Image (tube, rainbow, N blue to C red):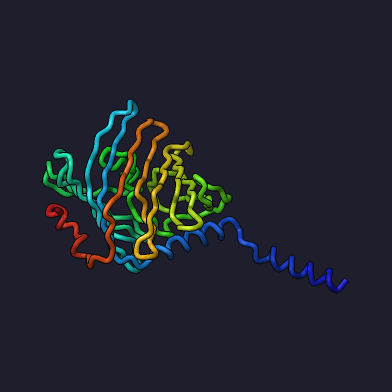
Length: 258
């Protein structure tokens, strides 16, 4: 009888401290964020391939830089090099933990810097299937989380969590994210629109590890289920800890971005 009482006590304690789906989802998000901290800054080259519903393709060449900011969201700068009609276009993003993100787009044809309104961040980035809000760093506090299940993606074990934006004017009611149990990076994301219908799916592949810690993909594909359009990003030449500073991410220097 004493053994049975002890067993009941142990089981009661286990249930008392069992994680809720919300707690587990948040724990996974915090761990993913923690594992990616400390890279300081990074850069990469990108090839963007736009495919319309008929399968016609157009290609753009870009470069991007990222600066890790302590106590706030990351800063990012993307510069278009090809083709000629978009060359010199530059996109600057300051992600914030709680406040609305700041984003600017420099359009060389107009020779002016255009601020992206918070209400317009759900719009397409340079005609691609990526929205402006997709290009911000995913700060943990900007979302709420719910663990759903475990499920493999192409043979890789993953956590599946539901993510809901805590900020205004998102184009999404929620997203469902498959996060690698090994890398703590997304393998697949389903995005649901304001009508709660499946809008887009992003698949991420070809991860490689840098500096013995940081996982970065070779390929991201964003497929729009409603328009049948697709955008593919191929990444190359990743570099880290190059000594970038706030001066490299100043909106007044957007026009001089090279």
